[in-house]
Image 1 (cartoon, rainbow, N blue to C red):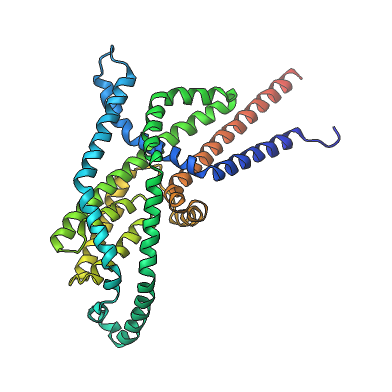
Image 2: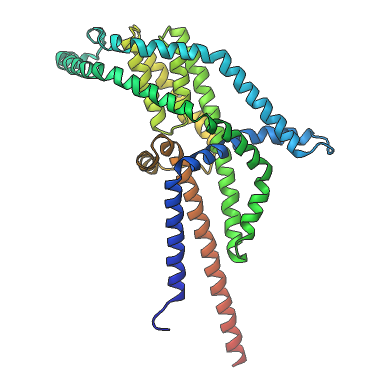
Length: 364
């Protein structure tokens, strides 16, 4: 009536609601980020909860077993922090204090270069000197800004408390929330969303646990190798590389750059051996360990990864970079599931029309 298309209106209304939801998420980015970290922490904890559930006596409530796991995990994190936190803080403080002096050293004159670059050594050294002079002027302000960032994070300790609390509630009530969400959907689309929810659950489970194991492997290998090589600030560099493993693609590259810069300007005499070790480890991790841990379902093309990292950096900074790959992988699942669902719906519709047409011809 009057050219009003109900189907088009529904699509416009749906697009408006999705846009409004994305706008609300952008406005409440801090809250959303806390919830996301709680979800990730839940996936890390849940295998231990499932293990305790298998041996839990029936008379013991499920909430008690979940609480026991969380208490043990938090206690372990506190013990690890107390054992290694002092050393980490000491190395970080010494590096920050010595950074201006390190940048002004004459180490660039002893920097080894391949033979084919020897004729360009003077130009390269001049460029390095200019960059060092610029960097030394910015070193102290940069350290000061990092300190302000740490103080700001310390002022938001409430978030560190909220993450395990929200994770506890998610594990306790996750199945209820899943059923409540699916109950809101009509029957035809419920099948589609059941598949999407299950696939995303498997995706996040694999992705989060794989990142944890990759980070621990990097911490162990880098820590042992750097200590044996005598690399300055070995523990600090190993921990930094392990944390940067949670940032896909860009994180490991940043870890390599930071390690080489700190090692060279701290006077480490064998940077090429260090680079060779890192290169071999990256080959092992990227082509053996990573595919084994990630398995299928988390594959995202390098083009989409780079685009996602750039978009995530623009939208959410470090948090956006951290979430780029799982968000792209989840969208990939949604699109593939929707394609299969609507293709099956069209086939069923065509089959019903053919059946109806055949009966009409037989009756005629």
